[in-house]
Image 1 (cartoon, helix red, strand yellow):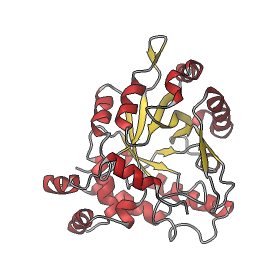
Image 2: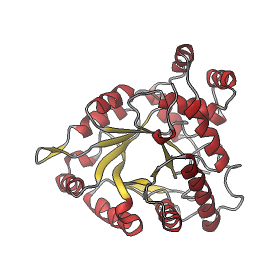
Image 3: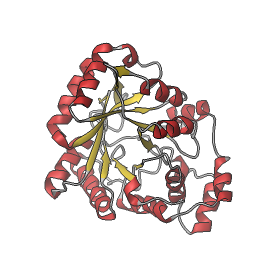
Image 4: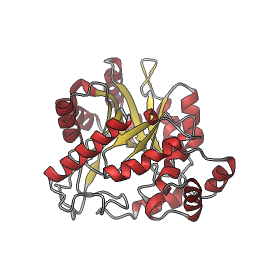
Length: 313
């Protein structure tokens, strides 16, 4: 089953800062990753994505200058039909260096939310339709922070959809617990963005249940931070060869085949990578291919242990 291009969202994690953990960025990015070059690269990908029909862009406070680049592009191009989602909770501290000891710092607190929402508003204003807690885990202090939950509920009451992204081996538990949160009898969250890919599908049942309950579901890390392309398993390569396409198209098509996935977030670092990702929208996987690809799943613990070992470069 393939999916229309309007089910894709463009994520700027790989373009808003010089270092990230995605494999396969080196040849795609400018040879010199200064701010001006990365801004131009971001504009080029945004232009091609818009021309292809993508109308959702996903950024975050910790994605370096992603919000700034997106705000500049929106102002220059004048596109009024682009939906923007952003995230708070991590602060970018890499100082635009490839060799920084620490690139981002996480804090789920009312103070961090207030500060970062103000920063997002200053850049993107009312363009933000969805604001998400970044990488919520089941043990986050957010779950018992009443002032923070009240602040999030107030944002939702003012017309901005409030969601959360998840990470780690207990994503499903975080999804279920977060959607149970209420303030004054009303749910705090209406959307979730979780990792789901051919190597890490464990959150699937929880995401399917969320979709069935009317929640909005976005899927991130569709290419497993580039592993499904740079280190593509034989089953992925075989399916790609059968369809005359690349492994990235197969990986994205697998996400689009999930009926509960409202948006598949892709994170290309160049127009070429974007074009390769977009081929997923015309690729229909057979039942036999789906079965072969299902055998690639790792345990959540193994997957997230491997992810934490990836180098920022």
